[in-house]
Structure formats: structure tokens, C-alpha cells
Length: 245
Image (cartoon, rainbow, N blue to C red; front, side, top):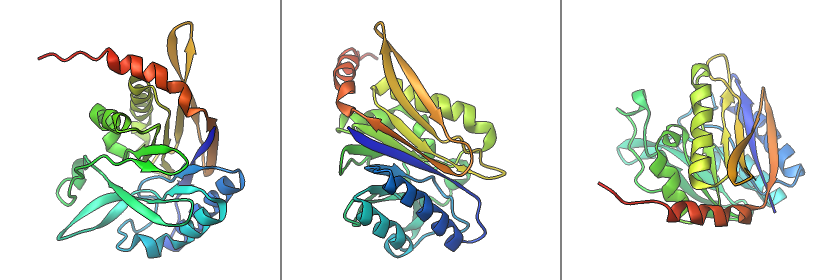
């Protein structure tokens, strides 16, 4: 069994306040023995971060203290002459072990953001992939991660209030398609709608049913998973895929 969690943030006036708020939420997750946790996309006042290791050093300290892997969110960062939106991943020793770049920049992001070209697998207490916000819309992102070995998918997101309902549908659909749990973290502000979601699956008389838990306001959500229970169903589902033109 592994304990997996998400943290939902609310608006703050400065990056320092935002880091302090997120650190408090991570502390709570750590004290509850979480193994891997995820923060939302772009939850800080200034979401352009040039040095992930310096900015998120408090998260690394907490990660090491509780032997907990942390997906620190997703932010604009430098990539040569352009920018990416990237999610830094910290392992349970407090080391930054890599980043996942956003593959599909959304709308206004397209002019400034260099799209990611690789779906990466991170291996700590379990094997997981990171789907950044709009990437959840595209089924091949989740499928690629799962076929590469991901046992669970995390999603740092920033979803406006009117987009919450379809976002929840996308999360449940990707979970059903790939027979895998999904934990998606959102931020809650006057513009962004919160309602971070955990999607698990339960089989009932041969039918797989998504089970969802939603967070309201600033807070955390933590669930235990037996990730091996999905493997048989996933193999059957993928074996049924047909190639056609």
C-alpha cells in the first residue's frame, strides 16, 4: 500500500506567503505518512520561477524530513531563449530528480511556451507520471505514461470555475481508459475553482466504476492505494485495443 495525496491552495499576496502556505500543507501530509504528494499549477503570485531548487528549498527539507516525494506544482521557467511550464519533482531524500514539461500549452500560453516533447516516469515509493493541467484533455498523454510503467498519475492544474465540471470528467475518463488512479490538484481563488479531485476505481459485477473525492477550500486529501490491484484489468483493457485506419 502507498499513501498518495494532494494539496489545494488559496490565494496569497506574495510568493513568500504562498510558499509558507504550501509548506504548511506539505507538513500536514508528511505527518500523515504520505508517500507522494502533488501541489497545483501556478498557485503563486509570481509564477515565473528561474531556480526551482532555491525557490522550493523549504519543500525539499520537508520531503526529506518525512521521506515523502513532492510534485511542487508547475510554473513558467527558462528554457534557452523561450520558456516552458514545468513541474519539478523532489524525492524522499530532498533531491530534485527531474521535471515534467507541459506538452500542450493552453490558449494564451502558446505564444510564449515551448511545448514539452517527453512524458517521463518518476520512480520513488511508486512509479508515477505527471500530467500538467491541459495535458489531461489529450488521451495519448495519459496512455503513454501508463504504457511506460506509471502506476498512478498526478496532475498539477489551474482550472477556472466554469471549467471544473469538464475537468472532473476528463480525470475520470483518463482513469477509466487506463485503469489507473488519478490525483489532480487545483488552486482555489475568486477565478480558479478548486475542487481538487482524487479518482479511484472499484469493480462492481464486472463493471469498473470511478470513485471520486473532492476538496473544498484550503486543505489536503490523502488516500491509501494498492496499486497492484489495477494491473490485471489494465492488461485486459490494453489487449483489447485494435489498430485501424
